[in-house]
Length: 123
Image 1 (cartoon, rainbow, N blue to C red):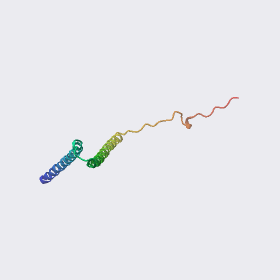
Image 2 (image 1 turned 30 degrees about the vertical axis):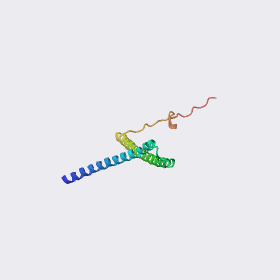
Image 3 (image 1 turned 120 degrees about the vertical axis):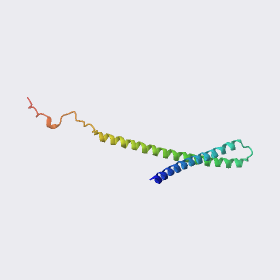
Image 4 (image 1 turned 120 degrees about the horizontal axis):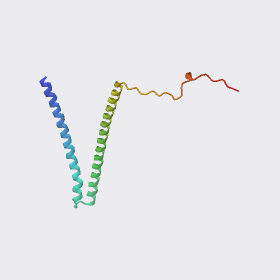
């Protein structure tokens, strides 16, 4: 029992470390990527052809960064949708457990069986 608990704790610690390492790598990559355009802004020793190559590399990085942001947005939207669906199911279960019944609307005119027989016509 004790070794099982220790194993579970160890796995949780490893999972947290992996998340932290992934965050750190993403931040390092982002810093490295953003430092490139700043260095290009300051350098004046490149020829025009080298500047064009630098701009093309920067454009490729922007497209990659934009793709990452879009993927993150899609994942965030899916998680938000799952939580909303879970909440809707919980509310539906709660409403059904209370015994909520939708109201039955009766017509404003009485049914045919309630009408009196027609009156004779006087001429």
